[in-house]
Image (tube, rainbow, N blue to C red; front, side):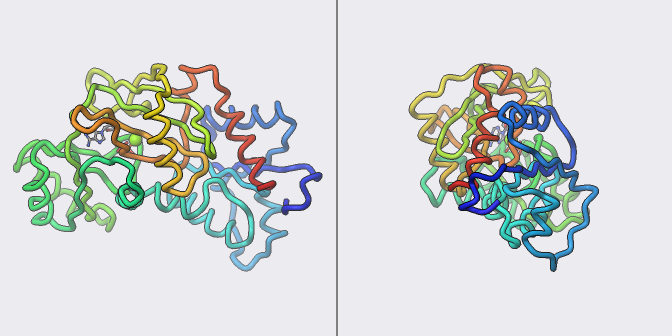
Length: 296
Ligand SMILES: Nc1ncnc2c1ncn2[C@@H]1O[C@H](COP(=O)(O)OP(=O)(O)O)[C@@H](O)[C@H]1O
Ligand SMILES: [Mg+2]
C-alpha cells in the first residue's frame, strides 16, 4: 500500500523460511488487530527481477516484515523488494550492517556507542598480531553468524593456531575474515534489549548454561527479567539509531571495566526467551510498528 491510501486495508507480508514461535505470535498479534497478513515462504518463491511494484506487492504484500532465518536469503530478498518500492522492516541497509559483526562494530563505534575492543585480521599472522594487542583469552567470531555458532575462545597460541588453520582450509571466503574481540570480564549473563522504532520495549538478562560460556537462548541460555535502567535505555536507543532503526535486539554485556558494551544488534529478532520474562506484548508492538510504516 502506498502513502495516501491509508484508508485501505493494510496487508503485511510476513516473509519467512521457517515458522518459529515468534512468527506464530506475530501472526496472532496481527489477527488480534484485524490486520491482514500474507505469509510468504521464501523457500518456495522465485522472483522475476524485472517485475514491477504491483506484481511484487501482489505476491509479498507491502509493507513486508522480513523474518528469514537465513541472513543472505533475507538480505537478497529485501534488496529486490526495496528496489521495487516495497517497504521492508528491517531495511536492506540496516540488515546489511547488523548481519555482519564487523560492519556493526564499525557503525556503533562511529556513533559513539560503547563496544568491546575488537580487531580485524585476514591471515594467521594478522591474528597473532591482533592477539599481541588484545591478549589471551580473546574471542574469535565469524563475521556472519548467530546462535553462538563457530565462536571460539582463543586461550593460547596452540589452540589459536589450530583454529585458524582449520578456518584457512574451509572454502568460505567469509571465514578468512578474522574478527577478534577482547574477552569481556562480565557476570555469566548478557542483556537483550528489544527496540521497536524509538521505543525500548523490553529487556531480559540471559544467563549462560552451566556447560557453556555463551548466553544464547538457542544454546540453552535462560532468560530473566531485567529492569530498563536509564543507562540501558540510552545505550540501546543509541545503538538502534546508529544502525538505522527498525525492529532490533540490542545485545550488551555488563563489563566490569567499562560498563555496558554492545556486542551485537540483531535484525531478525528472536524474543521467545525475553517474552517469558515480561507482560509486554512484544509481537503486538512489532506488528503495530510495521503497520505504521505505511503511514510514516
Ligand atoms: N568478547 C566477549 N567476551 C565474553 N563473552 C562474549 C564476548 N562476545 C560474545 N560473548 C558471549 O557469547 C555470546 C554470543 O556472542 P555474539 O557476539 O552475540 O554472537 P552470536 O551472533 O552468535 O549470538 C554472547 O551473547 C555473550 O554471552
Ligand atoms: Mg548474540
